Image (cartoon, rainbow, N blue to C red; front, side):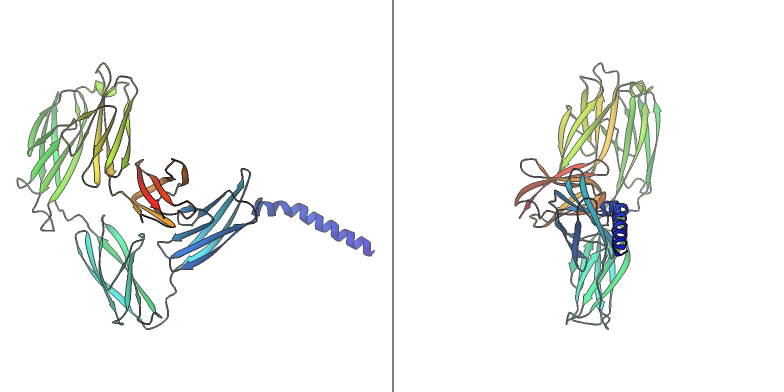
Length: 438
């Protein structure tokens, strides 16, 4: 009977292994993976490990950002709980994933330290002053969603865009044993202009008559761009087009006295589409478009069309001159968003297509620090759809698809030297920046 009991126990164990072994394989997949982490304030350091030879380590930090490498570091922008996942790839058919919950936030001491702050805004600059019951306290400031930090009892923070921002100050007392935090929602209006403007137009064959109106009346400058590379001035103007088509006519009104800031002038631009002629040139089968790449303050343009021997003409809103050719480059002196237009005409000049795109130049993407050691940060006003880091041999070393406006890429796994990081924003803008890895 004892032999029978042992035999039955062996059969039970075998059945358990048979039914539950697939579940264990599914959970751990085909390799073992785990990771440890250490958190200091809002910075988390992660270290992965596995009992297999790993081809790649991919991290999901739980805040729509990603990283690669066995050891990574992530600076979080907001306090809270995050689900962090590590996926390893052992072979083409073998991968494993483990996820853990982490908590980001400062453990502030329960002491008598108090902190508050007041502020005032002057256009794009906002001035902050910390208030505390400890005269010797040290202060650290940050804006939620930004990795830039400020120190001092009185600081100023520049804001590029209007909106509502959360600004926080952390006070540390003189013995460095107590911390206190204060956060406020700050409304920022970077546009001091109170100018309002509009225009009306009437078309008679290939002639358009334009009439502008604004709250500045005659005490303003009125500038028109006609959509074909030409300009005109005056509150009322008349213009004759040489070709039929649909043109985007823009009015820019500039008035110095309608600004809430004394040393700034107000500028408003209004654009409308104007149809000239019978539009046969627009309704034909001829198609055209263009692609562009931004490097610093230079934009490289390349036109394409559905027919051979197409004539390509380019112009921008800041230049009266037209440039010709399927491929061209434009250089801008200042950062900003510029409208660049392409006029494509087919070989027998019976069809014409005009395409305009607003292209961010210069400061839309910020890459820092440079040189970098372990982490390179990329920030943008738009979401970053994709990024790739190339070495001097044009080989991709790191890449990702974060779909967020800030990423911190762990570059500790790449060798010292010069690299290029190429970013693609959600509107299709592609930019390339050079940095040095220490």
